[in-house]
Length: 285
Ligand SMILES: *[C@@H]1O[C@H](CO)[C@@H](O)[C@H](O)[C@H]1NC(C)=O
Image 1 (cartoon, rainbow, N blue to C red):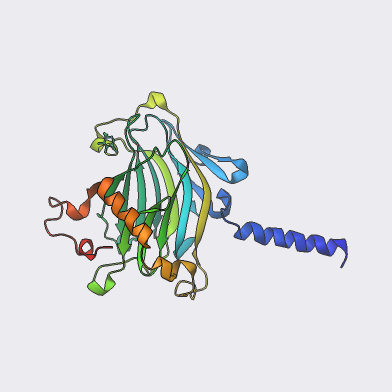
Image 2: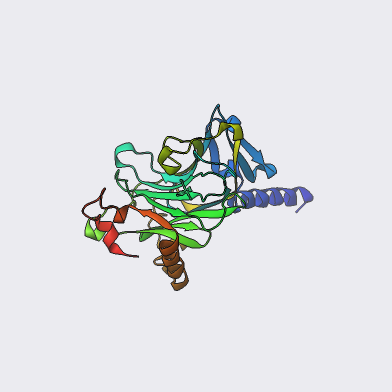
């Protein structure tokens, strides 16, 4: 084979390498959905900066939807006085009345006060399953990995390697579980000082604007939709493996630690909202 043939093979190999390599560049997996002038690519597109100023926040979404898998990215949140800002990272089926959605929302705070992470789970259009934790580190000082694992058995929200929330598939008990609609991956940075920090008491300080959040190490592994329908039900997908059917003993210990030491709100124990405990809350981990 001549050198031209080798060149073709190299180019093909490089291409497939770029397409499959994880983490991906921003533009491989995502596109801007709101105010692309406020999304700046860094490090050759392997990282981005989101900007919130008085004109606008911004947002991005995955180019594809996915049915089961794991999504993660490293995020460095708005530092200093971030009260009134909200950074969200979530999956959403985009089907209004029967929406499935898995949410991380990072609620900013006044300097030196802890960020709150709120999670929520919508299944078949029903949400109102908020939980809140305070982070045990400063999420604006450094990048940390935030991830969602989603398989037929459960959804797990991870902060680094700590599971902070588990939503099990309890369909057998009549509790809805997201499993038939693919979801896209989304993120936004915006102002929500009517509710975000201390229930809206703390207002955003625009003299500190612009506010910046940073993202990198985009990793989506899952069944891309539209795509082969056999993918989602294939039990040999790694995210369906036995180690992902339940928390390992180490993970279970970390999960209990978070719930005992860092949980500040759980809809499951909010008697004023739910005089009758929602059924999924009885299911344990
Ligand atoms: C902000 O800090 C206060 C005081 O430490 C805390 O009560 C609150 O949960 C924190 N988070 C938000 C989003 O208000």
